[in-house]
Length: 461
Image (cartoon, rainbow, N blue to C red; front, side, top):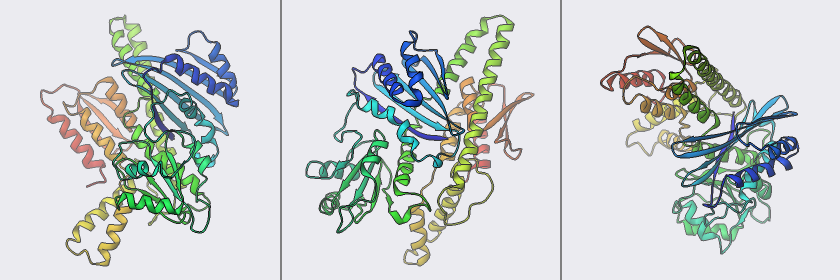
């Protein structure tokens, strides 16, 4: 299960050696990884390595694609019968960006304290002094709202500043010096992924005046999370899940927002390695038949690994969903194809019903529906898949090797059937679609295939 994906933009002077030095520093000072860090430091060849220590393993790769050099590191650790992986990918081109992906093989809600240890590497990159900083400096400490910062924060939450890092704003309780969240610990855990801003009542009122009603500003122990192109998320202690804390809910909401932003375009270990394998497979066309068979087998194993991983991620998401907050209605026990699928179906139905209200805006039905719809946006995982499928089949029904791998990662099983490919979604015979193996002169076949898939799977109609 994806725990966190984020990225940091580094200065133009940042280079490969800086990347290696920061990673080694992080590994050597983190107790469970120290032995791996010492091995990696002594290794002359830094890439193409597989290192092992007690409970840990480290893999490295260097891949060049589309004029970008990717320096890649993947750390795995067994922790309480689960496996945590951390991917750190430095993409070196005209811009210098470091991407972070953190995954856990099971229910992460059992480990409230572990993200702090695993996000230490993000703080090490921030503290390197080679991070591109905006007006609101990225750091591991909370930002107080005062004369120097109030205008900057107001412009951010009013949408006047283009900044991808969310703001978590906490207001002071009336007649108290207390705040509803743990400011310093949260600022440390979320450094690089969110700014923690806190304010007394005087500056909270000033902030509300400066935003001129363009964004919700909470008072009296309220918390709001502001992010790019999204409505502010409102949180209070009485909204916390049973047995949870507001700190945990803030971390979960921030990581959900940042993951959605970063995962759209971020490179990953699996995607880059599979693409590299596909290119090697094309080179193997000139080899003898035995070499060809070996290369094909490698590709098949890689694709099988992608299918199994997609299935595991789906099952893990379903397990995590069982521990989520109490919903307005009871969820169906039918397994979801996508995280949030039932949510999006219900939101679609509610939006249609709201539209049917017409001009009856003064009715109780309209008041309740409009408020429920406003508080429950689409999660949209299914929509993202449909958009990518449209792109893949925009020129017809044929698939390249990387596209086939990507489709299988979405959850489709692909098998040959005479002159056609058979696409079966999530192993269900109900959702089976045929593709022609023969290239077509038009793209109509691809559009028809996409239409059938969307018609069969979409919850948005």
